[in-house]
Length: 424
Ligand SMILES: *Cc1c(COP(=O)(O)O)cnc(C)c1O
Image 1 (spheres, rainbow, N blue to C red):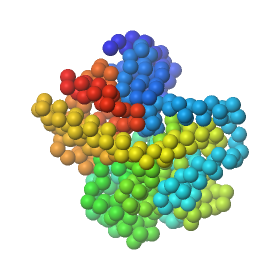
Image 2 (image 1 turned 90 degrees about the horizontal axis):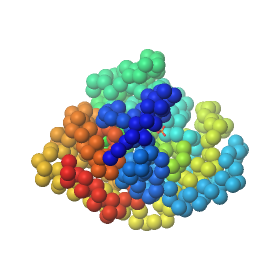
Image 3 (image 1 turned 45 degrees about the horizontal axis):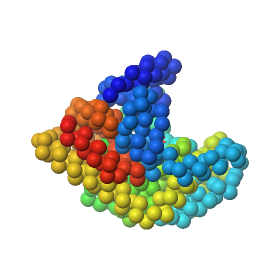
């Protein structure tokens, strides 16, 4: 493939945009090479600036679960755009989507819309602190909850009690309130609770981790966290920005039958437009302004175009009872067939998968936490990534990411993908 125009566009972007991109992972820094600039997307396919076409396994990092530019969502957006882009005043549409979500997701009474997953997680933690009157939170190494200060804490040694800032600009004062534990290591979490009695406002977790590659909870980890939180008056926050409306309509809460106190959303909930949200029971959500004292606001929150795209996307999903099983079947085929080909080639690998999320790790046998994910052979992944790209398959440009399977990926796209793996 030729990337002439992409290269030129990147050189130009580099002069005016920090690192040439508006979100770091897009820059291909970890896999090397020049990022591919996209110009259009339809269904399962992306077209780049040089007119190369790719089967897309990123799907805008999750939102395009129906495939790109679904005709029904496009139609809704056109109709809404004629009526107005943004009012900064309440609309009936916001109640419609709030009602639709709270009625179809277990265990939530109220939902507040924001404009990104970062905002959702940041606000949920503030609410948990306001509700409990406590300062500290527990997060897990390798989990990503957006780029708010409290979450950018180094995935340090497992025994770390106090986190260290891993991004310049995060103050020590903020970092000391974020306690770190290893994913799937319940004893370490218990230890943190013993050392910080009555101080922990919330545990925040990706119920299926997707930001260290796809990593699943093991040995009733989530159930145990639920009990621990109940015993200590701590809130359990499920960050379902990635998993919400992707694994099941009710996300991980439904899948694992574990109730969270607060749930955050993003990605799929906006159908490709910038939306995030956080939700919970009345007794907690009532603490938010203007009803309660915990402040949170947004000029474009509940934006009508974003709400239209989100509502239509969620309705399409909900109206198809086979939706999630279909996605899971596609992903299972990819898992099994890619695994077979790699095994035949004598390439050691581990594929983690749940529903429509999956990751391929090289030269490791198990990946249950961030340490394991780090032990995977990332230079081999980088070769794999570039080989797939050359062959028209667009994978996430990092071995620490999840592939997002969309409903537009069918047999033809699976075959193109497997053909590319065969020549790796
Ligand atoms: C993507 C993501 C976020 C951040 O969402 P943005 O919309 O990028 O701010 C937070 N949590 C998880 C689990 C995510 O995958």
